[in-house]
Length: 548
Image (cartoon, rainbow, N blue to C red; front, side):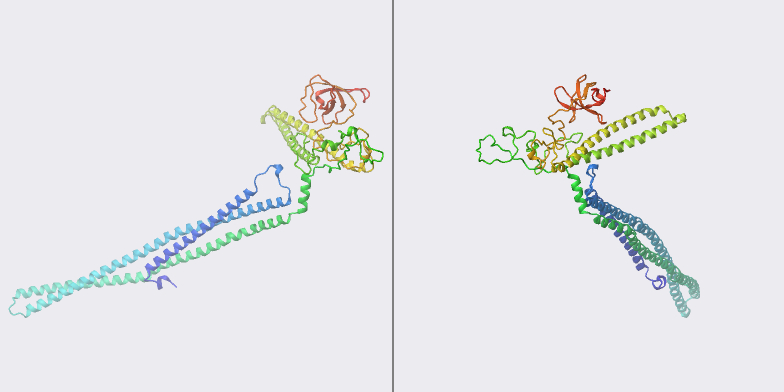
């Protein structure tokens, strides 16, 4: 099927059809544009959704529950999925919409060129037809004029009254008209032959070629639409493997939810390390009432004057139990002694790990600076070794500060772990009737003066039990004395205020944590920095030793 052969007379319809084809192509391009805008908006909304439900968190707020971790994994996969939707939009914009718009402009220019060629050819044929028609009309007029001249000549020639001169004049007029008729005839014949030749070329050469070009253009447009339809689908198909991985990641995250692990994390997060409160003792307020011999007595521990023993932890903490009520808010202390033992131990361990990481960074920086200094010393043209010394000194100072912090926190951690160990041993020792000597506190802080209470469960400890380290009735013996070299404000819990040149009793030596336990003349005890005092031990404690 050829447009040039079968549609030789349908120039106007082909003009309309090719215009419709370009309009349809641009309509499809508009559809692709709206589709990619939907993809872009969808991806943007997905990213906003992920950002909304995955806010920035501090390191302490990082989720540990498997359900939370799985949910954030799903959010990450959804964020990757949104990225693939953006890829789809970008590919559609570049390989489909952009290509269609460029091709549409080319089609418009090509169509315009072919139609102009067709119109020029048609105009030339119309011009040939006009020349032929004019020569034909001229030939027709000349023939009519020649017929009139012949009739006039014959009339005068047959008229006996006509003069010879009139007859000769009519004869010459007839010859002139016949000559003009012959010329117009020849001109008409030439124009007719030329028009027929141009018309044959028009309908058999020019128009078929122009229509064939239009047909090729329209067919290429159709092929291009098919290719873009395929590209439209291929863009979607190419992201399917990655989208499938995102969905598989979501399924894997769902499988990673472990309810038992989450329950264990709850226990680990909130376990205080305290023993459950024991039974309250019976407080007999009727001891001062005289009883007869027949009166039965209640076998309960007696205290003087019917008043509760001030050393009994139950009486000390009966108004402080908060296991089933609102926990009192304790101030945040540097040694974290306001926290329950288990939580304090975890926080201290976490702080030590962080400080160790910072210390390692400082050590790496010191080593790098030393290497650079060695290079500068060997190659002075590369730099001045002295310029690195301030930075090296600053790094070493930071290292010392970090080591001091680590040492301090490790001492606190050792204290917590020591108390925790004693606490864990307390209940078994009670079961075998082993208790502290009269008048002394057990490791748990409860007094065991009355042997009738040796099988009683331990009471709930005081929330501030770890802040009070000097509740013993019997003071520790003095190991020596010390003189304060500097003043110390004693702002932390368990420390002691000390003035310069003040003399104090040493009751516990430094155990390697940088602190010495001392007692004032007034009997107040506490810890002071070992480096702040000059210590002299008594001769009966491993010889006299002086620390500065």
